Length: 368
Ligand SMILES: Cc1ncc(COP(=O)(O)O)c(C=O)c1O
Image 1 (cartoon, rainbow, N blue to C red):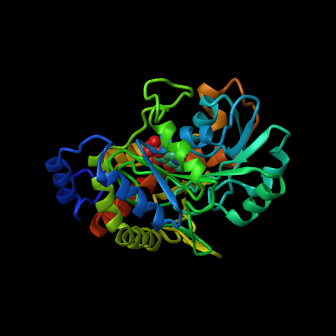
Image 2 (cartoon, rainbow, N blue to C red):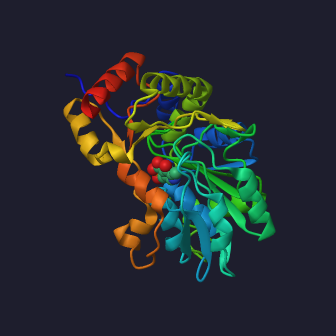
Image 3 (cartoon, rainbow, N blue to C red):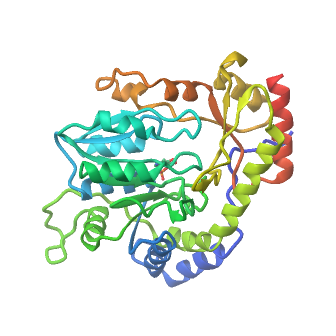
């Protein structure tokens, strides 16, 4: 029985050609023309003036928080239902993450909870577009404006996604992306920060490069990181960018196929396919087992694995993380429920229609 992995990337465009060109040129580190070209073309694609390519989406968040000068005694509001990179970027910079729960239907951060979490120490909100649906940005932007808070937009999962026709990644003072292998486009590992602010862009460039000084290279006045993306990775990224529109179409078809095949299944909550102002672009195809089904996601995932189907669990909420335990004792019931009962199915750009049919057959078998 062939195993169907949770993700299969597609690298069948100009990737080889561009990587070979990079190899032939000898520019294999971060000094190389593909990096700048990728930054320019990607930032333009999401309607931003500047792009700063980095080594991962997590690195992009570390830099974004620091570039905004966020640190000691300050707070950043974010969803508890997200990846640890969001909380760690804030903690590593000496500030405190403050959490809100998520909505039961979109799994995105609950905007109605934000105002009650604002204190005199709050300096920013970090919306995170989760699993293919954008955060409800209009009311979030209103709150940010009312309290003069920065927006750090984590669009790691939202390449090419739009909210009321505006690209995800165009809403933050700084917005960040990941190009990990399971994203709509990939560089293997990689990330990007985008912004319209020249000063912030320059600051991010410096932070990604150990804060070398232009005049006195090895004398340092600030703490930075080596978070550079290589020319080889950027070559892949540039080729992938050419496939982004096709990949979005593919992912939407794939999501719709799952929706059709799983419609009316009594044990499952399937993702929302659209809402006013946006459509799901199915970064992943997530499912939640209905509570009366009586089994957790872990049990079903183990059975699916035995049937040759790769899956992943939903995020485990930040307030329940052992490494963050000392800070947080509140309860966030929706996030707790979906993390216990949620998981996602194979849905890479390279996952085929027949594989989806096999996945659904075996899922139904396991559930019954
Ligand atoms: C919402 C979100 N933010 C940040 C990241 C971190 O990106 P990376 O894995 O490139 O560090 C991810 C990774 O999947 C993510 O889903």
